[in-house]
Image (cartoon, rainbow, N blue to C red; front, side, top):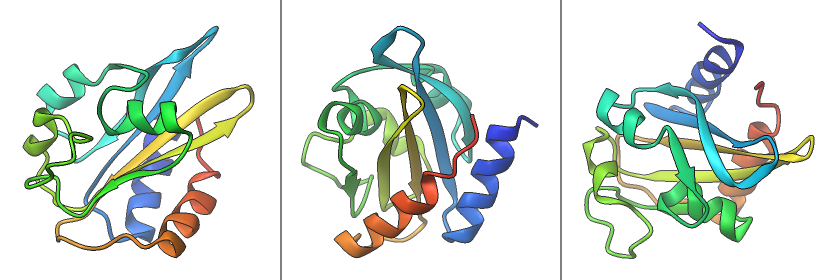
Amino acid sequence: MSATEAWLKAFLQRHDAVAGTVHVTLPGDLDTLALRAAVGIPPKVQEVTARVPRGKGMAGLALERSEPVSTCNLQTDETGDVRPGAKAVAAQAAVALPIPRDGAVVVVGLAWLDDRELPESLLEQLAKDAASVEF
């Protein structure tokens, strides 16, 4: 298990989440995210999200907007922010948190089993904790 995956597992436990990812911008390419770690994410979804361009899906939108992108329910979201493949994740509420770090951007995603609101105060707390990401 990589240090990034170990960090992600601990992060998910701290926040009672069931699935998550860590994506990092590629060296010299701040428009593409590369998957560094995944927990609770089906293999097909990992394959499809191995590289994520700026603006695509929740992680790519978080990169583009430089702010968290969240949904109360992956399964029923109609905003267009959630890609159809995300419905393969056995979860409902989810968030992608962009963390600028060392000249790169790390996007940490997490998802919960239940449908829930993600208020600004919670998003701030999650982002603060996500800033400890190891990659």
